[in-house]
Image 1 (cartoon, rainbow, N blue to C red):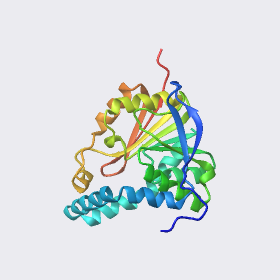
Image 2: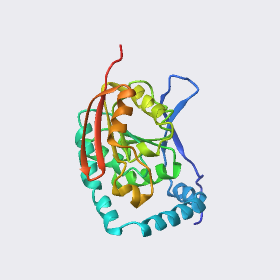
Image 3: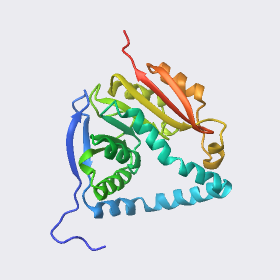
Length: 245
């Protein structure tokens, strides 16, 4: 693809919040050039090809009909999460990926919604989709790690972990960070497959049991836990941050 005449390849950063440590700034990325998105994809091309090949192998060993069932759950899950956080804004979406959930919440609420992900290429794709839908003014996307969030204490009314809980190493550290950035009474929403279900075989991944998820949230200082199943092995867990005296 030829470079655009008279333009530089740029990523624009907006310094919005900073962590309590002055040197650890939180930058929100406004990824305005489609060219940048394509460059990110190109730079990760070999990794993506390996990932796609691995996913194809996993899918071949799984039930394609069952995978379709999980895919079809997305609108229901997004709607359930949006309803749960409607009274607890602003919202932070952990491991937001390509921004489907972040954008769904932002467009439905009309409020600024925040997403964080370690992958710049995913954030680029999320920004491109937000611009195409005309909701980029409602989305703030940050490159970062769930275990070391760059936001100020008590910045959010709710925090979401959709299909990300099992992906995070040193999960207790991430849950401590989630509690730190939530306001008193703020909500944490966890949606994840659970141990022993069909998803474990389908995607060849390891998950926590519902009891383990609830135990970890309790140890991290969350209370008022409620849970139910959105599918046979997809659990929805909600909890609140309460003051520790």
